[in-house]
Length: 615
Image 1 (spheres, rainbow, N blue to C red):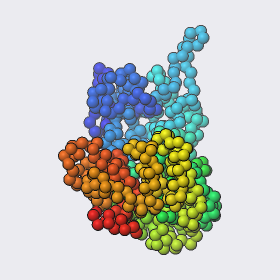
Image 2 (tube, helix red, strand yellow):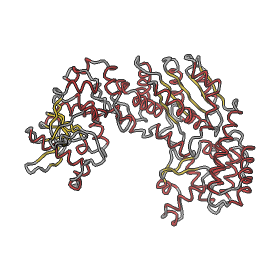
Image 3 (cartoon, rainbow, N blue to C red):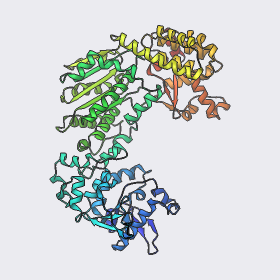
Image 4 (cartoon, rainbow, N blue to C red):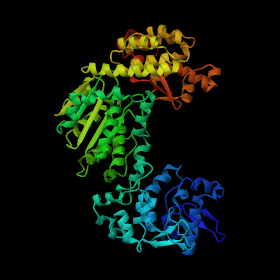
């Protein structure tokens, strides 16, 4: 623990880290964060004095002065005593916070909304106190800051004492609905899990995961939740946002048809139908369909107190192409939505490459789903076929989960693969939704997508109605229900080098079908001035085990000096491979698994085998 020490001149400084047996008596501040806080880096870097006129600095000064009046030389303030850039220190702080407040000699609650220096009409000073209006009582973190310390004193923003937890006990109880016995220090174990959960229901945190962290002490849980995800830093919510952004946004008309589909309705409405498998060929829009399903289900599920957890597998990204990462993602979101499930988390979650990780996390997930307090839960897993590592283990677990509880429903998606079908067929009550067997609905969805992309192109290029209709007719006639084919062609037409008068000739050069399109793209690359460089980049991207950064590419591919020394030129080269590769945050990815399959010779087209030859 790191404290602030106030010297006789009124200045304060950070102490070094203190072991538990060397921590002196200290006061601790409880407050709500604002926009002008003094942070650890300000004190460590000597720039804190630049914020002397800020509200955040005034709070620290108040805490130090009040501590001195109470005979305490040391004090602690969360804004500046934790180095949040150090993941290990932050994790330790999250686990220790409740104990730090409990061990404090005094806790000072700083109520920024309360002033004791207002004037009546006759000019006399009067204290106006309305605790119910204070933001402090609505924040998640302040729950433990109220419960843990033995002595909690409340102060106005003017630094005047308003009372303490004992003298204000009845009013605090009326505001928070926390039993007075809990405020008086009765063991928290005397209160049921459900009762303690009610204390946090009306409180908010800036980040959803903070609500779980703020309950660690309330439930006597000391678990490395951050470690659960730090080894696989792809928050499923962020991954979903990235997918939608990369694909140009989510179009409601492209997915809403599924809610009228008989197979989907049967899965959603019948309690005995617990598993829905959405299957289809590459590029049919399975991922965006599930993004839409998640969006539509999320509000009614969460409004009714249920859980929704999801994960998007991607074969070309080693962080999210394995079964253990799927478990981490699902558990992570379940804990965010129902923090009481924290009690099932083990002390050690193990790195993903450790064989114990799967054993421990699969057991943990099953225990969570069997929890008698579990709310209605929906689990969504996209692209099972792109779970490369331990796919069979994941399929077996999905089958097991399908029989765990009637409160748990699953929807999964994949290509039409026999090994997946054989495993999922063992689930007694399951539904299948084949995109090929719903060709009419998929075609209508692709039609909406085509018009959406044409209008975007038209705004960019200034097409007339004749050009728009010609593009539509060609795309509509040749798309064959494949979103990806439409997206790749529209991407090519949107190239700044394609002028308006070249649009239709360029368009008609693209053949129907994904494999034929990839073959045409390979032909285009082969005829370009940079064919050799592009082929070397494509070959490297195909054979490496994980996506590589631009910097790593420079060490793997021999490039001319003028490109080697100029990152912008290298990015331009990647764009020339644009129908196969994309660049995100300086890392190279395939635009779709089907593009990598083509270069690996796994497609039926002759050009796929030729591509594999030079790869």
